[in-house]
Amino acid sequence: MKELKIKQKNSVFKKIFIKFCRLIGYEIIDQNNLFLPVANKSGENRISQQGKYSITLPTGIVNITRPVKSLDVILRSCASVKIIKQSKERLFEKEKFVYSIKTLKSIINSINFSKEKLKNVEMSITIIDDRSDEKILNEFKSILADNQIKSNIINLDVDKYKPQIKLINEENKKVHEDMLLNMSSIHQSFALGKNFNDLIYFVEDDYIHKKECILEMILTYEKLASQLNSELFLCPSDYPYLYANMEKTSILLGDKSHWRGINQTLLTFLTSKKLLDKYFNELTNMCKYEHYPFEKPLHKIYEKEYCFSPIPSLSMHCTNINSIYGIPPNFEWKKVWDEN
Image 1 (cartoon, rainbow, N blue to C red):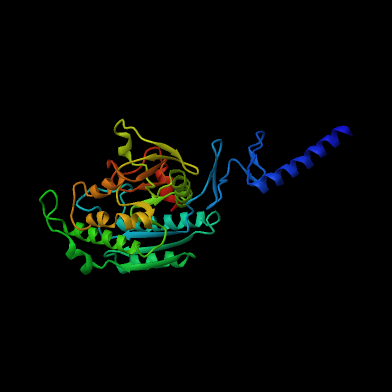
Image 2: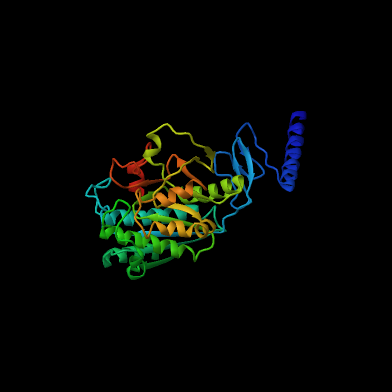
């Protein structure tokens, strides 16, 4: 009987202590089973609270001073061109429209996966399409209609943006017609981004996302921006080039992934409206003059601002197998492909 009373007293004391911790904003952890009684969650699960705090065991809590309010995805699609200025086959050797459709499906799957945790974050998808045939556009519309996500499809405004491009590039060569249209699409995506309010994810139509991608990017953005007191860039792909040389970098903890400081990406990245406004001239410079490498102005920005990519990768870039900006190492390529 004494032993039972002791257990009851311990239980009562524990409940009182948990209520006290909730009141003063502290979290505690049961070392026996890694259970967090204040949050009423297992330490194996995501225990961060979007917009309020980020918890990573065993490093503790980061109070969020930079909450995310919205995420607007701008997907640039061109289902008619395999790879600009290349004849190589992509991973899995499918027609280009297959990658465009899978990219859209993977983004939607990732948004749907994140909804429970990101109830206060408004999300939308806008597709800027370049020359996809009617059958593909109808497929896009059907996919979007089946999901409760704010969406829009607009055509590339070639007449507005193409005339602004210099026809001779940095290598003193004539700019390829497909590149002229690609640069116009990029320009239109940046111009569209100025209409949004918070985070913007610029993405090309050959990136297949893991379902955890959107959730991890938003929770990590909040955490790192709060820690660093700075807006930043995130790229969801762990590119192969990062393992080609011995380079010094910074490794930070996101919500569930490690994130590595990087200084190069392609034109798929997430950033804030503040940074888009700050570097709008530099970003649109890529759309008016073909540099070598093409993303040189973007890489110059990364010399002044933080940019991170995840380890392991949250998406795969479906270019050819040998590309240094292609499929990520130690990644379940076929599994992610089939899931979408």
